[in-house]
Length: 82
Image (tube, rainbow, N blue to C red; front, side, top):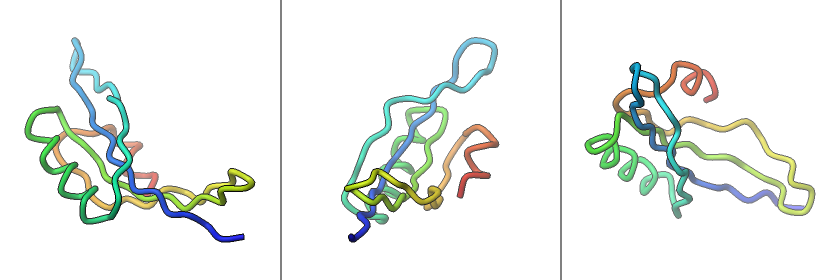
């Protein structure tokens, strides 16, 4: 059983009261693409993170996410995930 690596970009938007809210996560094809997209999104959003995650497709078991890049304002606990 082989694992599949997913590359994800998670944007964050600033809400009233300076509270960050997660936007819609996006799957991309590579770590490099995830990093570039997170950088670009951080220019129009409060911030964004790029991360990868290995998943066993048959069982749904997943390894902890690995942080690729963090840009702009993101919740502190997101940085602890990688």
